[in-house]
Amino acid sequence: MENEMFKKLGKGIGTTIFASILLFSQMTVSEAAVISKKVETDPKIKILNNNVPVSGNVSPILIDGTTYLPVRSLSGALNKNVLWDGPSKSIYITDNVNPNEVNLKNEIYNLENYVRTKDLRITELENAGKSKDAKITELENVTKSKDAKITELENAIKSKDVKIAELEKQLKAKSTISLKDLEKQLNKNYKNWNSLAFDITLRGNKDYIDVEIEIDLGVVNYNKEWYKLQDTKIEKFLNNIAGDIWYEYKDAEITGEVINSKDDKSLVIFSGDKGYLNKIRIYR
Image (cartoon, rainbow, N blue to C red):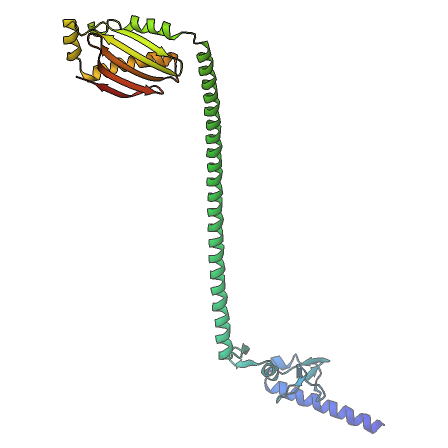
């Protein structure tokens, strides 16, 4: 039993001494002076990467119960590059880059940028569409407002038309002048028109009125004055007479004739309705 313990102790001491020699061989005297920790190796310690054993030239070591892993073996298992820089005493660990993976990442990056650009364009177009929709809504509201105003004005016009029709009806109902009285009034107004003597006779009713205007052209002065009159002046004379009749009998149809009382020959014939003489024929 004692021999077995001695063997184990001797083995541990030997390992410790060997590790110390390794360390001292790479350190200065001042660095080695601070080494007072127990260093040993344990071949039973394994390194596994995703349950796969990691192989290497240097095994893990124990220093005062703390396990230290070899950098190069561990980095190789993790697909890393290890570089030792002696002058600076630095260990550089870098990624072991796969060119295909880099290209794939670049393609993914470019595609993501392309998608972002398209997304920005879509957002821009959506905002433009919203702006157009808002403008359309604004114009539709303006149109509705205009339509409402037009409807309001149309209703106001209809209301005024109704009022006018009502007033005209009342005025017509109040008109009590007879054809005989109207005839007297016309003779008074036009008996000596343009230095000519006329005799006006009205026949008919409120819907149809026949107008007979007599002038004696046997009188020398009348004959000369009549034929000196321009057609436009005669037309104005007849329109004035018809207008006075329509003032009292708005819906009447008018037919009439200007006659030379000396020989009963027709000098002018005329007719019209709805406030307008649409036919005037002058005989010379």
